[in-house]
Figure 1 (cartoon, rainbow, N blue to C red):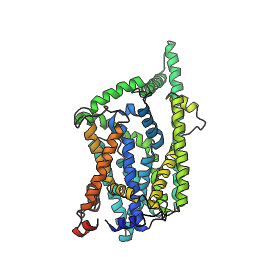
Figure 2 (cartoon, rainbow, N blue to C red; figure 1 turned 45 degrees about the vertical axis):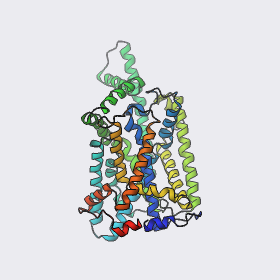
Figure 3 (cartoon, one colour; figure 1 turned 45 degrees about the horizontal axis):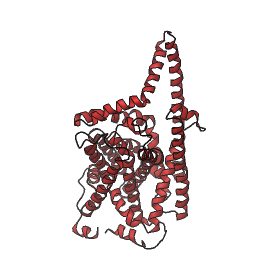
Figure 4 (cartoon, rainbow, N blue to C red; figure 1 turned 60 degrees about the horizontal axis):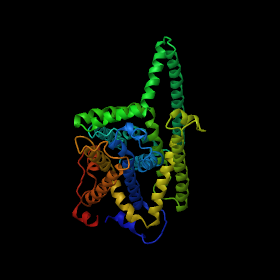
Amino acid sequence: MSTAEIYAFQGSASLSFKPTDKKSRIVLLDAIRGIAICGILLMNIPYFGMSGHFVDDPRVRNELGQALNMRTWFIVQFILEGSMRGLFSCLFGAGAMLFISRLEKLNQGLRPADLYIRRLIWLLVFGLINGYVLNWAGDILYHYAIVGFFLFPFRVAKPRLVMGLVIFFVFISMLHSWVQKRSAFETRSKGMAAMQLEANKQTLTEEQKADLEKWKGYQDDHDPKKNLDKGNKETQEFRGNYASVWRANGKWTTLLETVKFHGGMFYDIIIFMLLGIFLYKTGILTGQKSNTFYLIMMVIGYAFGIGWGIMQKNQVLAANFNYFNFWMNKTIPVSLYQLHRMGTTLGHMSLIILLWNSGWFKWLLIPFSKMGQMAFTNYLLQSLICGLFFYGYGLGYYGKLQRYELYYVVIAVWAFEMVFSIVWLQFFRFGPLEWLWRSLTYWEWQPLKRERTEMVTA
């Protein structure tokens, strides 16, 4: 057992509830990161295991009367959605500050910036590999690399400025949702007007034809029967050989890394990276506040996050999944999605820190810290394992499991990655991809294998 872990277990037989010391904070951050990695798969597995046309709307596969599928849909889509990604983004922002601060203590001049930029460039490359080679369109590494370039100046920023920017980007995100809503209503209004003119045998202008085409396209995208046909077609493509999967996945990867990223994903990521920097700079993320502080943050975070999720689910069902009915029945004209994510994310974070500070649950969190030490490896390993399990060039289970059955796969992957991480780190200093990433960043092969004396104490 390492020195950090020996410290982590000290006092575990009693409820100490003390702020963590410097060594234990690193293990705590790894534990939070490990739980976030597990949570990421909770959110990603529906898109690994079935067509995206099936995921958001349970009407498409006639799931409305199926209790287990509906409960799964509700918990994942309305309670947990976005929070695990938020937790992971917070840790990325905090990790960037930790990485830069260590470099600046050891190096002068441009070397810290040079190494940080190299690290992000290689992260971007790994993201492209994840998206286009491992065939995971939901890759987040590519996006993190791009947003990460904006973080370097914040190493010297005061927490107040960082929090101000978090609030600013939340406001921008709300404004963006309001503009999207107005655009959708305008599309419907113009499209229905053009449709009425066409029904009356009137000649449409080119602009009116474009309005009609746009409205029909919108209707097609939200029609359960047409989405069933699209999803069935896509299912056959993902059950094909590698070339078939690559073609089907490639269009989604390109969409998510261009239009979707610039259309809102940037705000989604930078809000939580900056929040992570704020939480790190103020000592909140590293467990330095009082237990009362974390308890209050957990209660408020979960109350808002879970409450918002329940309300959203009820409104979606009441509107019968109709976007326009949903918005017409809402009293708040903008989306509170980012605030919901923030509340639930802070709830998760506070709960983990409370468990850690209690001393009673470190035995449970230490295995997650091992997964967190190998978060990069485990994240890409999830893409590899799920690709081989679901896609046609592997076992071909794509589209064959019920929504709730997908989570049996999640548990199996968690178990494998936890055991793999624990065993690997008994013999090696870093995870395999962490080692490769580090070596590429420094342009020098890093020592990987532990010395015999390290293995004894590991």
